[in-house]
Image (cartoon, rainbow, N blue to C red; front, top):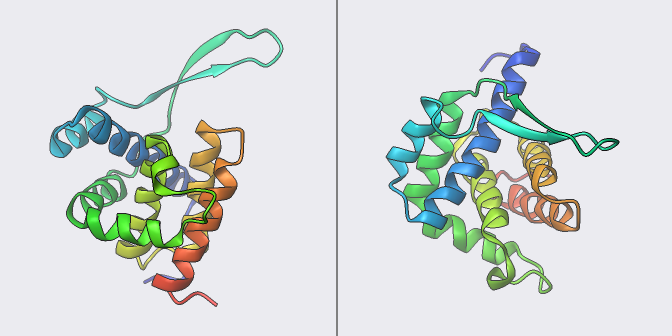
Length: 166
């Protein structure tokens, strides 16, 4: 493992991969889609790749192209959730606070948490603090309420256990 700092474009490609993984996991659960087909659809640009932004002053919507994604990280996260899904869900359930029972979690929150836990379990090369922070950012992309704080708390608890973070 290199001690060199990753270049900024690598970080944005990783951020895009995390967002895409959460979206892919949502699609897989919501539509009972075949995981390998969803992965392929993201990689060829059939899914993902575009976002709608809204100008706060004018309420005008604009479609923007997203940064290309780190395909290796994206594939790794989605496949890890597919192969270790029961373990990942059990880990998440064990880290949830009483006010956030599993049954209350929206599919989007579950997808974000699953992708985050997959990264914590499968990617020892990525610092756990970076993983937690990045998935909190993903949660902010979907939620303006308490969900990002919950994602932070849950992933932080899990990181301390699976990565022995002090």
